[in-house]
Length: 176
Image (tube, rainbow, N blue to C red):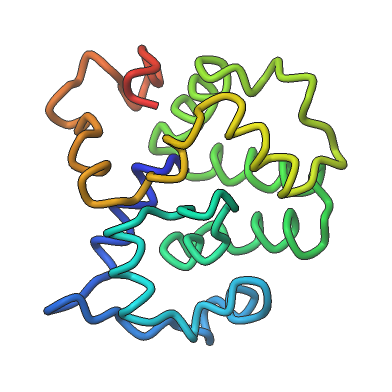
């Protein structure tokens, strides 16, 4: 999922007057354990993300996955079990099983952003190392993802079909 996807999911998860819907720990128990602890997500955190972004301190915010519970098994395997190879296989199979074009979107995103050929990322890459890679590549801009003003600047794919398609993936890095 891209930061834009997370932002849209976050907005969709919000109820009236910014009240966050109670997280369903019965359906997603692994996201109710450290380091995610989605059951404790607060309105204040939501508002802070909207005003400061997902990672204002320069560290990836694992709580953003609370807005994308479909990724529970993937994130648990990657972050908690620290098995990046198994996590990649889970994500790949999930993308294929969705049958809605997410496989094309994921694949094209990987190539457009250079993730598929990035030799700096290994099976042992840590979150701290990933944060540093984001700083090197994007400067401080990646930290602002999720900020309401940042989200409003992202292209809405439904309004720009030339940027991506469910059958042929992303066509431009402007959409990623």
